[in-house]
Amino acid sequence: MWDEEKIPNSEGAPFEKRKLRALKSRSRETDATVWLGKEGASEAVVSQVESQLKSRELVKVKIQRSALREDEASDIATKIAASTGATLVEILGHTFTVYKKRVNPIVQEKE
Image (cartoon, rainbow, N blue to C red; front, side):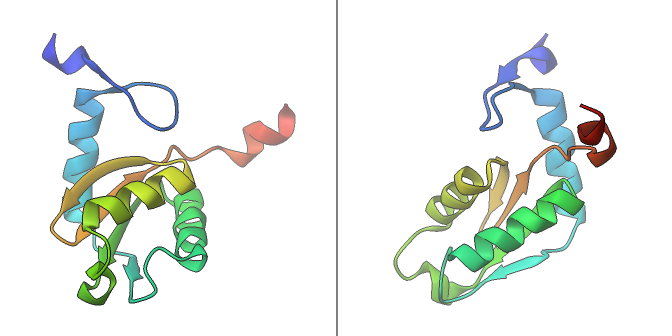
């Protein structure tokens, strides 16, 4: 019963807690693929995260300390997740993970 509880996310469809736990587990096993520097959450970083979300569903972002002068890690993570349309999976220290279900391009062409 607890695993079936729904969690709202930015993609519109609710997540099951079981899926969120599985994503957190996968997140901890992967390395960061995007590094956020002193420019902060610029459009270049957002577009990089978007392009990586298209090729892989789970993207881990590491925030350098120079980017944290004005904002906190949770603020930056929320901003990037909202602008990419992804779901914020986890924030651990200066690292966060976002998830967006990959759309199969073959299915899209048929429609």
